[in-house]
Length: 273
Image (cartoon, rainbow, N blue to C red; front, side):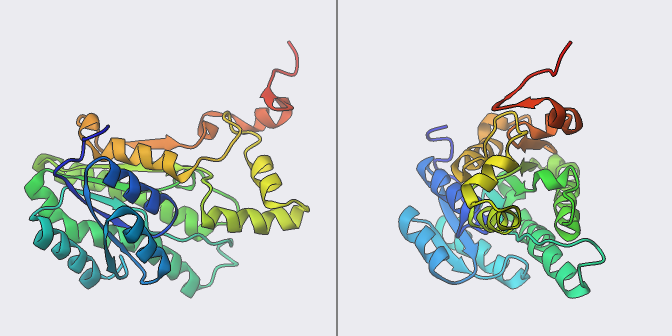
């Protein structure tokens, strides 16, 4: 994809860490100018310093902050071609375990950030026939037990992407979603640490056990998800919109009820004829 983004300008929300930071780095390598929007701090500054992106400190769920990021792109380069929505947080808890404040905090961080950023970017994206890529999750397609707010938020991202595709496709705007499963990010590390402790496992062992039924038997790296995002954001996916691309190590393709009975070492083999 070298050169696919030459002359293009992207805005990446949640670009200070993890998948967002990896996407900023890749888009810069592919020729894009990038504005990265995220909370003020070392992570945002570090991404900007190492990639040459322009940092705008702010909250992607705040309309004024998103407008400032769009204005930065327009003032510096006169255009905006791509929005990548990576902002989000995770949480544990069933509906009974999740208070109203926590519920709204998770939806704001995951859904409002996507909606507000898209709303701020769309006038420019309509002008440039641009692209939107929002990061959902495997939890946007299936329920993860004990994560009601997060599952609800990630399902909502898919609905938003489909609405954007339907409403703005006639204007030339494409919108797609990426659904990773486990990715080795700071957020996933914290999850593995929490769940691993309860099972008497260290982080590496927790990742290994969690991925045991994935066909690829491993978590993804942020840079691998960034490659998927860049494909959907760029010209090589020109016929694709409203799509939900599973970047989940194949786990959504597996009947886990049977896989749990047939797994044998590091291979899935039938238990017998």
